[in-house]
Image (cartoon, rainbow, N blue to C red):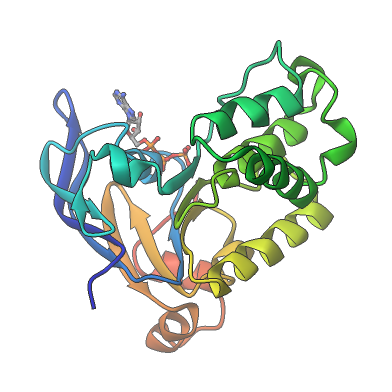
Length: 240
Ligand SMILES: Nc1ncnc2c1ncn2[C@@H]1O[C@H](COP(=O)(O)OP(=O)(O)OP(=O)(O)O)[C@@H](O)[C@H]1O
């Protein structure tokens, strides 16, 4: 089976600093794949290569069977960056409408998608407010709604639940799980171990290298321990 996201011998340097070191990764369709590691381990750098925002120094990235960057494929990826890329002067509704318009959705589809995405992140009653008046958590939620607006086949979520309260976090994870069951492929970065538990497959990353990988269950069995945090530590990791 061809992987939906495939990284082959990826290395990335910034100047003399090697940030990703010979990474191979294959993410199959319909999976929630978690990339877990401490701050500065290279997660965001890796994600940016997958969504075509940066290019590897060596190696190749493929998404949906096509080499990245590729404009057609990029339309099929919903990306939630760590820093919110929103227009502060516009309302929540105007932001969603703007991002939806980038995908040339039909008017009725666009309306439905905006309503769905806003409801999912519990922002429907705040859509008329300017984003500059949103709290940090509300901005994160709106960013997630933007990532989902075109109903993408592949979702890449860089720390999607940072700054989001536990109740909403649960409902967002329930939705991530539902999206997976509709066949979407989802890559999530996190440094929260209880979120790692919700992933089908995990790669633990430190200093630009994958320390170990597998399902949460496999990893715990392999290391003979019941907590993923301990797996990470035993695999050579060190949380920040
Ligand atoms: N454009 C850049 N120029 C130089 N160094 C960079 C650049 N982008 C990232 N780095 C460095 O690469 C390393 C990995 O950063 P990255 O943002 O990928 O880590 P991360 O695992 O996503 O961390 P966090 O969880 O804090 O977001 C860091 O040492 C960072 O300083």
